[in-house]
Image 1 (cartoon, helix red, strand yellow):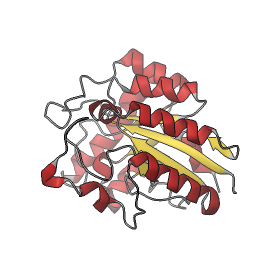
Image 2: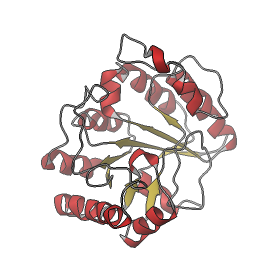
Image 3: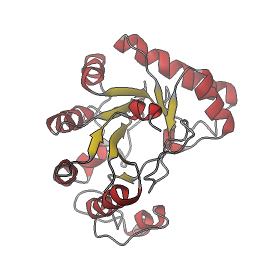
Length: 248
């Protein structure tokens, strides 16, 4: 087996990130928390998103993990005017740096959407890396502004409305997001398959997610079970997303 680097990232800045931060800390693991200044979570999809992290909570997470930018208003940067996209990126960096008093080096494209212009804006703003939402990657890409993930903590293989009900109209969506996909009965079993694959063939495993989805779908125990599984392996180094930049 290879030595691999294990990193996690969590989007949208929900107050439930505090629970994720504590869970990771208890297992000696690292997380990068991508926090927008504003997040409109007032709809059924985001029913478990009660509020955004306040400034004290952001500072607390920054002390034990890593804070990354996620735009000011979480708008998709590829569909708004370029000048607004540029402002969203640059201002999201200064917004968090004013809170933490420390450099914010990493950015997550809202919705995972980017193009060459958006990537250039991110570089020009002074970030050192940016993360997408492309899945099933276990080998680090040379392009630091296209950091990809391996598996996302979301209901799998069937889409759900909440912890107890399926979304029948789009029930097969999760399976369509993983190409090529390995058959699995849950996101956790999928993650275990790809973690073993990373140990055998790759050099990193990147787990991503949203704390409000863990709450909405009742997935906290599943996350902890997977973290225990990862911790049971010796050849794993735990890093924040920003630490991945210098890896060869």
